Image (cartoon, rainbow, N blue to C red; front, side):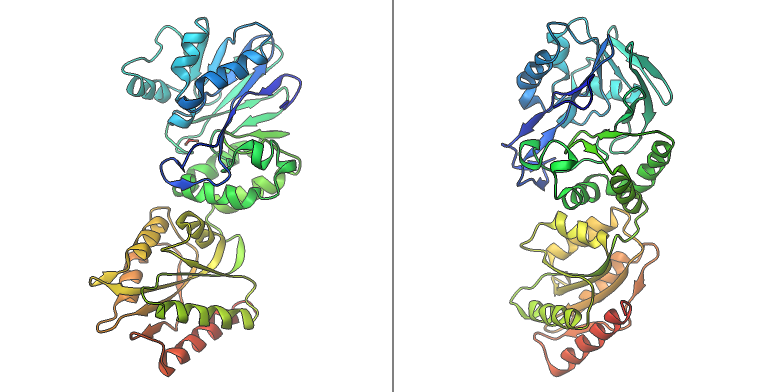
Length: 395
Ligand code: FEO
């Protein structure tokens, strides 16, 4: 793939991976992106996962016309990008690594003390690397997604190499090489963002502000398609996500149910919300559905209903994991409601509220629902009242 006459794609697709970062299902596989920038001198932008070293080096050689690359720019040291650094440095003994000081410290830790003392250029915010007809400028992007991260701007072709930011799950031979071919960018980019970078919205927002000062024609992330055309759409979504603003109006109902009674309450509430014209109602079974998708939805929509059972004097484990996944990502700015079930001493609502109490700018629905074992006239009436209250906000 050609990003421009001088910038070529040399990344790889991974269809063997079961869980990305040991955590996220990737039914469409995963791409580890890498690019060659040729300005007379050449820079390779990032390496790839160590299972793909040979394929990646083959891709680089395939676009180098027999020359050796001069530089390897390392923007991020997580092993999905740093895993082939040693192989590259062995294959191209004249090449020099360009990276942040923190990244070189990480190299020493990952590579048994090897930090390329004689083959490195340390860069920081505002530094540049002259390649001839191209100049690369470096932008510090700490915590997007690790502290050593830098992004890189090519002022000649106006390309932003954005490290993990603007990444998406999916191999490029499935989802398309550029955003023009990718119909589902927002869904999988949102799951990726909130799962992987979501805790660091403030830091990502600071980098977006720096990016706003640049003339950008294409965004080359480390995962997912190259973003071209209508970049305002992608930048706008990232602005919303990094500010923890709700992107869509609607209610997410996240539940666990042991014997189906809590599920019946959830289904009844969903039916009523839909009947009352709530713009979107998303129901997720936390024990069976992808929790990263549930986290994504909880950040996307403005209202979340948590429904679970009292369990071991606490709450059901999948709900506990879900709420922890939200709070550790600085969950905020939502309207919340609760359905609890308990056969002798229901206390799930109290536990869930206490887990969420440190979150900023939350409003709580007036009407909670308490189920004692199974639905009753009383709990059905509470569901009616909750549905009325939640739906009223969308009228
Ligand atoms: Fe794609 Fe944070 O590594």
